[in-house]
Image (cartoon, rainbow, N blue to C red; front, side, top):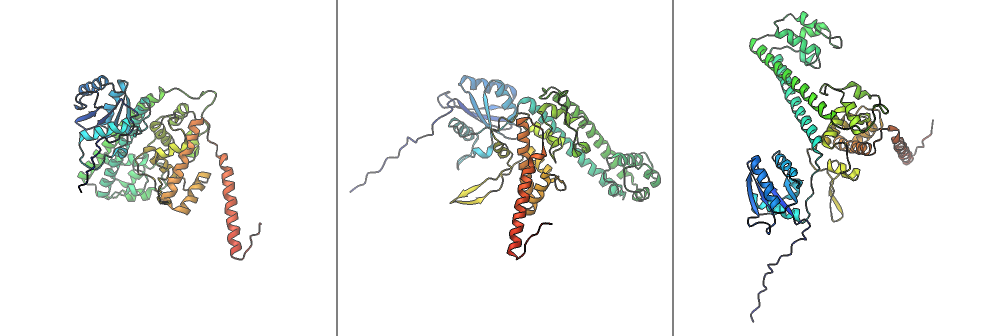
Length: 451
């Protein structure tokens, strides 16, 4: 008796199409591949060069195909011109994380990638990454460029220290910063031909703790001409980058001046600066950044312990002054990758580590959390408790998480930071600590007596 073979069902059920006018783009350095629904064109997948004229041709072709929304991966910086040109044509451009659009196992080609993006976007399985408005992006680009200048300038400081070490001049081990007033004055004098250690030590600024004799002793070395030449060029390049940073500060300030004020500066002037705001840092901009951010954001974030004007500037350049894109603070800290990523199976938590990421605001908040080690505020106590309980890495993440929630609340409500709201939480912690101490003493046969 022969068995009848079952016919394979070729009519595979597809997911319900939510976005019928969706397209997908695979971004490359030299060319892009675009996929549209199969019924829109005889050639539903086309490739274009990345020249500006070709990108405009691609946008016009998408218009002729009746496309409304387009999905693309955030590939390096190659997506930026494509995104901006398509956005200018009125398309809803969705920038997605490459981790969320991994293709199914099999061959990987540019054609398959753009078709896979188009399919996922049409059935509503893609979420767009957050991108602030263009005016915020302009400030963000300048700030990131300024960070690059700082890093490059710091490398030339190392070159100067290397040249000094090769001449056995230990001045960088005696004073904390060779790019300060004393350090630069001594280096300039050395490059001018001065070799007398006592005369060089006489250039010491009054704030330097080291004595003149110690400084003079550190300046006794072997002044070889090749190392003097290296020191000279390193100093010139360092000062060139300092000049570029000053010009970048002027450009940032001019952009900030174009933003509308959210507070009346006459009726509501900025609160007095905190100790960290008053102290400042060497890499801060050469204008009153704190007041500018207070005027634009509507609240002074530097009143939060550990948050400097530079950290507040990072928040503004990465998020802006409107956090309505994040419905709750949970969404905000999730975007920052500062919350646990629980992996649960069979009722057991396999992992709860935070996801890896390169969010600049998250990194800045983690640096702010580390600065709270010696703080006597509530946030400082919170960081030390977490560090004693779970270790430094977990404490840094937990404290950065709390800082992010505080910033979200202040920006959303427009209120000023008030540390007294944490008094209730601190009292509850003290009660729990006292209760635990009493229980521990009771188990050991002792009884606590109030003094």
